[in-house]
Length: 213
Image (cartoon, rainbow, N blue to C red; front, side, top):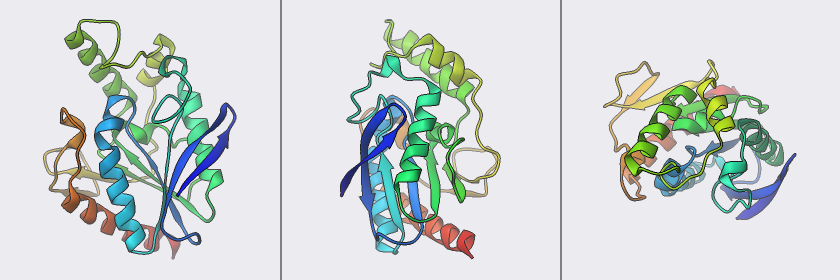
């Protein structure tokens, strides 16, 4: 189901999955090009969650997806305000599911708890964007025009300390859980990993129910 949610800068689309009552997992895709590479996977994960009776939501953030706001006009405060607006839009206790740099946007939302998959800091994201720009030899970042102000904001942006963190086995950083899977954000084309989505949906569903106790 596609709905619209309001935030201080306008309104955006939000996909809804599963039941209309109870806790809702609100997902934040990675920013910029990684969003395109992981969207199918996150949709698959939210559908698996719905099969286990847990509602999910996937909002378009400003400058992403079907948003009419140009990427170069977006600021970090916009991303965070929009995610907070999406959280207010859903019914029931809300839980964040941030993938990669999506973990940077849940800081100001009123959430019951946070779950992050391979989160990266803003400084890490900016370094990756600069590598992409240099490799492309142009002024854009893998096809995205990003304002210097946003890059400056991201370089100082951190991740909420209180979150369940899950990483792939190939990632040696500290985590609550390491799982086998494909780093889809590194692929040249969008894709999914059904087995990983099923495994993570099980972990998220268990975590949500434990948090609700």
